[in-house]
Length: 248
Ligand code: PGA
Image (cartoon, rainbow, N blue to C red; front, side, top):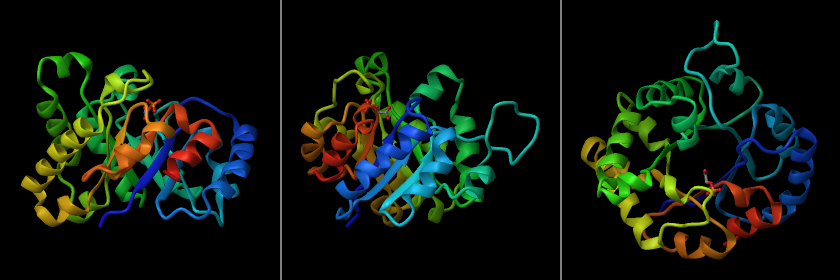
């Protein structure tokens, strides 16, 4: 059976002082959970979070990275830089990066490969817009994004990729996909992986749901056959809310 993996995505929130206080509050609240718990935080908080999460069951991730190792890329941070300070995970291809920062399926694929080259575990986001959903294109959009993101990876790398299915219309809007809908889309993603990489890989890959996950809907979402956890934005900003989701 696949384990649940629950990741918080703080987006552009909290400074190092605030992140340290947050950790002090949440560590005792999640100390007995069996799920994997990850916090993906702004670059500026990473070092402090890695230091203060040591010895707890919380893992730390970044929210983006560049695909090159180093060079003239003003404002960017590489996978080897993240690795050097003890970061273990990295979100790649979040819809906000696709929408506001020109992230494409091609750059997502390059970043995933660079993440593996630096022994970072990627959390790769896919998801349809409201317009695409209304035109009946959800399956086509999410399976194509998945296929292009994973292109050229080994079976082992695919198994170690976490995919987050995040319908764009559900992100930060308070609108959650129904657990049945989200589970169906996640099955479609798993079927696509099965077609390319085989059943064993498809059965092992962790696929999360994201989009307005909160303490009140976590349990229902996580009781489905194929939803293996969540990528949580807004509700991860308060330790008591995120802990309630993790302890669903
Ligand atoms: P939300 O964000 O939980 O605030 O909807 C989810 C995400 O963007 O990862």
